[in-house]
Image (cartoon, rainbow, N blue to C red; front, top):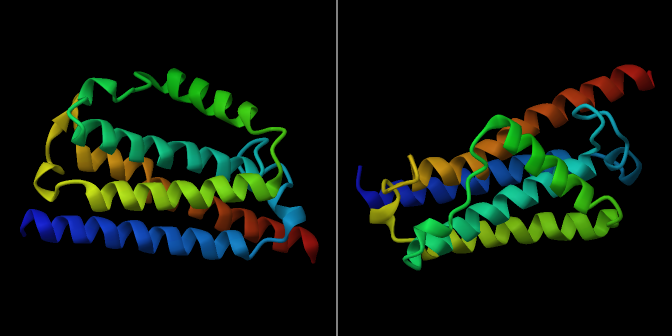
Length: 164
């Protein structure tokens, strides 16, 4: 497989995971989107902000690397730090409207797609701070989308069993 094919595969994976997640999100009412309990005390709205943060970070990381500034790629460094980043980002969006968070979520996907489109295919396997560019990007975008899609599907099943 060539680097170009790998990039096309990445873009396809990103789009497919995004569409599946978007379809799941669209299946909930606005009230359900703001109801806590999807993942611990988080609502789907909270998850959308969380997903947006990581996708925006993935896009920024690609821009740093392609711009010759891999040292600007920030890493949490530990699971505790990841939790702290997630909590910080959730708190930063608490007062934001559902429409505002949805817009941020949509924009983050567009940013990730654009950054990948601009990224040289031959550099996807480049190691930056202990992982390949592709592994970091996948983990912060389409693999992350799939992780939360599973949680949304579980939440849907839970709502359906409590509504009947």
